Image (tube, helix red, strand yellow):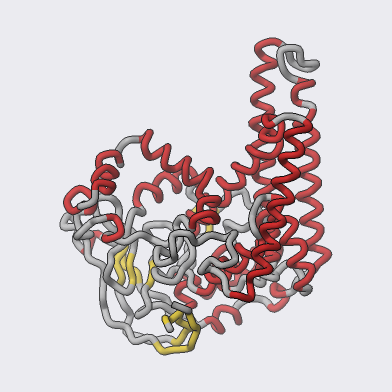
Length: 433
């Protein structure tokens, strides 16, 4: 099941998705697969945007470390300043202020630690500096701090970039098909054609805000650890025991064995330090300073990546229509706390076109790329809470057949359909071998 990359010419044969009986094709927005070549897109980016500076990248590490230290210092003094006998505010007002202060700390420390995650992500793409040794050393330290197995994730993430938007080859946020959910016909969705008890139960509960809220919270807080531990949202053809901690997992090859174990060792060090700190202080103390911000990192990471790759207007391709460039454009830029998260949300389209561009050049490169992409550049400034709720509710499954497919909601309704232009392009496809 290995994937190979090769140049090819795409021959288009119209295979549009089908629609619910209540929808006519005139009611659904049309989508034409883009025809760009990778050279055309890379040539649009100013040359200096590809330059990397170890000093400049390390300065962002120092900035994040300073923010974390400052926030930790403030948190250390919360109980002194606020509480029943707080030096600044006491009594009931002091208790309220104390919890408000902790909530503020968790919010900002979670965002800053997400920024740390993003810098390690750059190390994994070798965009941190021109030194692979420095990149991997810094990445290993930073990702270990936020409980990510650096090399293990780096390897699977490279596969995601090699096959983004491919229904059978992408590594994460892989759309489930109608048959995966026990739906025998996509038109009509769960209500008319669900066969499995799980799908019928989901149909009954889909309009319950509490059910949806619980599902969203589960995804946001534990979705990323679930992906690392049991391949949640990954390819279903992987074996059930596939994970990011076992060097024998299908994700890896024999040459990755030592790198996976080294990544596991980094996590063991951090977990050991947390256990030691809990014994010296208390479990609640470690949770307050580190545990809750760690859960916040999971939230921001899953939120950003979920919304970048999951939306009713984003296509997913199968082998007959997939090219690397088309896959790279199966993402959408958003505005989500860009300063503290180092612009990972609002320059993600560019990141998939060339992941070696450091984040401090990504904004300029994105502006250049937008001029070439035109309507194929996707961006929304919709608030992330609104988008999360909408995308989580709408993006339920895709058709089992069709070379270009879009998410349907529980009623089987899609918001886009494919319409081909009479032209051809060359690109890079991911093919089975």
